[in-house]
Image 1 (cartoon, rainbow, N blue to C red):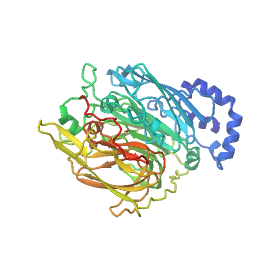
Image 2 (tube, rainbow, N blue to C red):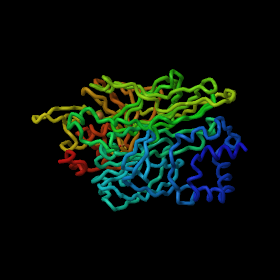
Image 3 (cartoon, helix red, strand yellow):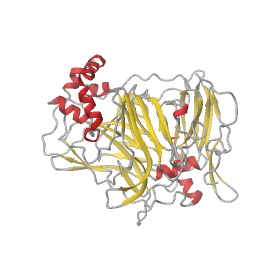
Image 4 (cartoon, rainbow, N blue to C red):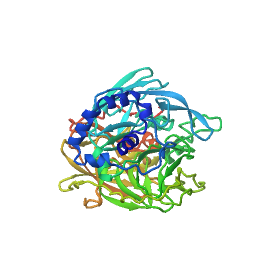
Length: 516
Ligand code: C2O
Ligand code: CU
């Protein structure tokens, strides 16, 4: 019985995956044998308790992509970008830009080492691509138009295929007019699971949470992506409707007091930060962008900038029948970002089931060894995030005063370690993202910041400087760097690093100011 419960909770959307489910049943003996070999704790896996009431996450869990390939280590899916009417869960609906007709795009569930094959079709009225945020893919699969592939034109298709090499929560989104396209709804989560992690945690309840927003007017029309001109760009346009797995925050998670659960959170909003709060109760942070951290930490308020991820254990407590709001507070991301803002509605509400409080073992907050990168011999590079006002009054972002369409690429040799000093003297914070590699945050002298974690996106607060170490260990190519406030990226705060390539001009990608 425990086994059945475990399977159900591990694959919450089995009902919408008939082919995979049928196949899994047929292959069950082989799978079990494989697990027994792979997992020293196979017995523990089978005994894993289900601590939450049945259907605890039914109102919130994201829909999942259908795996059409029966091979156990291949996940093959069809992904279609298409305009579709979506219900935001508050009585409002909107013609959004979607993957497979829904918001967010379907959760792509894989396990570490799997081959992922994505048959992508563009049914949008505009060119697009799919970028796999945080995944260490070959450059040809990175989804950057002009560098890794031509844009996928309206009516065209492209197959993305690569091996998922790192466990963690990642996400996918376009890299063409990304402020507009992400703002219109194009983003989805991609989970790379390590089955050992569940065994080590001792429980299986897990919820993938996609935080985003969308700009919609009373008529249900999408906001103009250029609203406010370059002043709107300089601030970063936030949508007026906050979404949690595509719905306005009316969802209820039914929980047993004290029982542990794992929340995998990604912020896919194009400009909005989230400052998470569980009414003072604690979160145990066990991971972030690139998987588990070197040590868990206990937090009561956690900021997740655009593009960043969090891996949390929560064991919320409350009397049966009572409710607990999971909120985001307004975060000061710079000039004009906190004034006159109404208090936000809860992201969702936890409701305590009429059950005795959980009395099982406390969760073991898992971690892993993350060797700190050494700054010895690292090449030093300064990236100064800049904003200027042009003669015509327009604002323009840049790195070292040059917008991406006028800048020269940074360079790195294969195998080289670099220490980047990210200087932000602009009035706004910038969640800075590097494609294709993880980095580590370090002190000014290059010493590790503990607990050590692998990041691909880091908040560089306004008037602050952040130092990171990155090793370009593999995969030559021209890789993007940019602010993940996508208006800022399009407004100039973007560039590339040519890794292991001969000297040369920037590949003509993203070369021109948007709309010009
Ligand atoms: Cu999510 Cu170029 O990034
Ligand atoms: Cu920015």
